[in-house]
Each structure stands twice: as structure tokens, then as C-alpha cells.
Image (cartoon, rainbow, N blue to C red):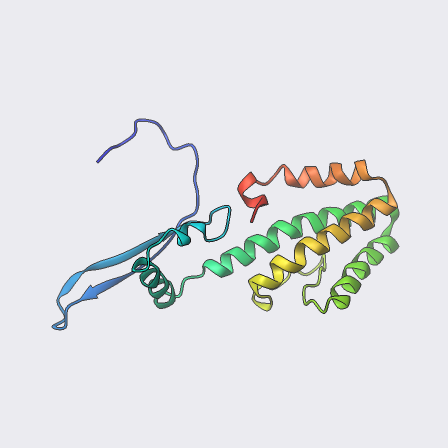
Length: 178
């Protein structure tokens, strides 16, 4: 076993799923472990699995009640919510409470026009269980762009971009591509 003398400089969450394997007589034979990590581009690593490995991974994830999709939904909501809140606060501080309400109404109207479920409320965090992963991936970028345009109409593009950069700087490059 190789052990590096270098200290770890980067930590990343890893999800582990596993189950024990027993013989027909109940004798312990070993275990199957599956380590997963979120990567920049969805499931490209899964695409590299061969036809024997794919069903094993799927079975272990299903059998072990893996919460990978829930974690991705939480990540997406948290990521976009940071921008929504920043833009909402920017609009509120720049143009007043009435415009803050109109900011929310604008996002609700866009969601309604597209028959989307996602609703931004600065006082109540969204429940990730209410949305499918596909919905979040489709809806959140469009709503964020709409929020950006709304804020830009009230001030100027440079000020809004500075607000966006303030939030963007807090995220790693990998999370921006999720």
C-alpha cells in the first residue's frame, strides 16, 4: 500500500453503500461496498462501467436506499437559493420593499407561465422533496436569469453582475457546473 507523505489538501464528500454477502447456509462471505462522489458532469463515471458492473451498482444503490439524488437536489436548491436571496436583498435595498415584493411576484409569474412548481420565498426555504431533479435542472437556471434581468432593469448590469460575482466566488468551479 502506498502512503503519501503529503497532507490531504482537498476534502470531498463520499457516499458509501454496502451490504454483507452470506452463503445459503448463512456463513458470512464478505461484503460489497460502493463508494460514490458527486462529479462535475452528472454520471459520466457511471457511463464507464461495463455491462456487468452497471446492474451491480444499480442494485446496491436501490437496496441500500442511496440518497444521492436527494443530495443533488439539495445542492441545486442551495446553490440557486444563494443567488435568489442575494438578488432579492439587492432589489430590496436598492429600490425598496415594494420592488422586493414585485421581484417575488415576477418569479412566481414566470413559474406560473411555464407551469413550474418551484417558488422562491425568502422567508421559507423550499422543500427539496417537492421537486424532481429534472424539474430543478430545467426551472432554476431560467428563474435565475429572470431574477437577474429584473434586478438589471432597476439598476445597471455592472451592479447586478457584481452581486452575482459575490455569490459565485463562494462556490467551487465544480458546483457551478452541477
